Image 1 (cartoon, one colour):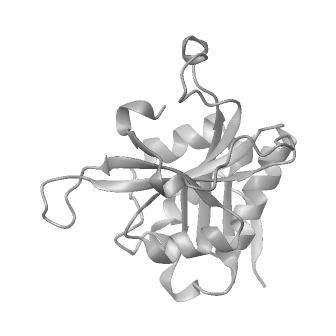
Image 2: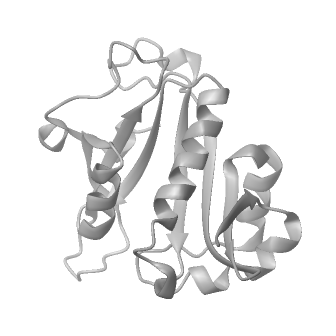
Length: 188
């Protein structure tokens, strides 16, 4: 039976099983440690048979106050920085469990919504997030600049969001997000 719990510093040495696909970013240990120290309540792992088989990293943030009049200003919200499940443990609902755990933690911090960025080509992840209630808020043109396809231009990202209880009027989601284009410079 899977167990979801908050990540401990010693867990950072046991995440490799989860980072085995081309869509999962691999970070150095200082990156993971900085999230663990700044946002410990938003860093969860999922264990199966005493082995970490998935994790989610999140944070809470808002745009700086000097951007308050910008159309791209973001109020207090949660952000999913990374979510991954080891390949052999996929399609068991584990990503859903981790995502809901992070959303609940963000609700406790009274955030307006949870957002994430996903590659336009990562159709499996997009379908997963849509099944969880996320929708595309905007397309960030050329956000990923690692040239995976050899086209010498970046790949677009979808900024996907799910409103939380605080956003009763659903003012931080939109219906036509795939057609709403912004540049990476517009994204805080």
